[in-house]
Image 1 (tube, helix red, strand yellow):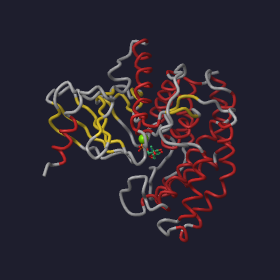
Image 2 (cartoon, rainbow, N blue to C red):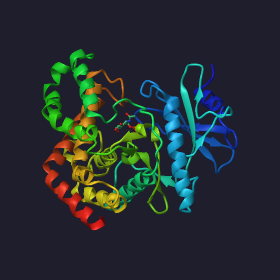
Image 3 (cartoon, rainbow, N blue to C red):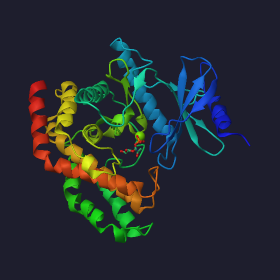
Image 4 (cartoon, rainbow, N blue to C red):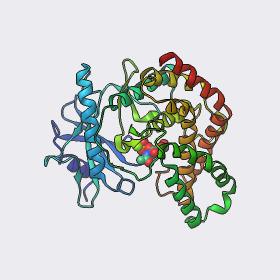
Length: 369
Ligand code: GN1
Ligand code: MG
């Protein structure tokens, strides 16, 4: 029997690496894909090997084509502004056959990117300065994609589309696959009480009031590489969900992580809440890059987008718990319910402070418009 390491090294050998991989490390992060670091004989060159989750991404080849188009575009921008294209954008490593992925005998898809050294990632923002830098980084990412005009494939159907999410929700409640609904009356009530208001937000996208742009769709802080010398955002990673949607998704999802005083799955709800200071700092960084490019409806709905994406996350964690934990990786039984409660506490805190959040957005917008 081949060991797992030997299997992974064999998969790595399908790719055009500068020198062969010799060791594999498993950082054990991410809720969806399996991620490994490949070390090579050359101490300065490592790679990231990922097995893409094909239960979640039904068409990995089209997803990889999205990522290729977007990274090629950003790479041109980085070169134009005199940046370092090996560090400021993901580099996809092709297979020896020139493909963007390797498909193994079991039909699993594998992808390799260049590992970017001297970087740091965070699971929570530890200072307002970091939040400001994070906002600036996503603002810059969006700006660099403003003139990207090729259509992108929809890698996950209806990803941040509330009409679609509520349809899935109604099906999950009706099916009650794990027999858990009877004990979740309170939590189910949280969703049902807000569905009309949240659907209304999505209608702004459907009617074109909120324009479609190129969006990352998964901008939580752990998907950003910060430069370990300067702590500036260096590179936005995890581009699996890059698609056309409202750019407010990226603001809202970032606030959900940067401005939370607790962890995403904090079992201690006393620790969870929205920090207005962190909210202000992130918004400052973000609007310093984007104020002149966003339309009035985007500014008016910026603060609401944080509630929208956090609500969606409550719904998705709870729906997965109801479905019997099939989507997200869990670390212990009941993890999805703990995540649901922690995200709901954050949502309530945003609702309590919504007036101040919205006022801050408009104040900061005036400064940069
Ligand atoms: C997943 O893959 P990862 O861990 O970056 C999820 C996001 C959720 C997030 C919750 C494709 O992100 O949508 O917001 O978990 N990605 C997908 O932390 O579903
Ligand atoms: Mg992701």
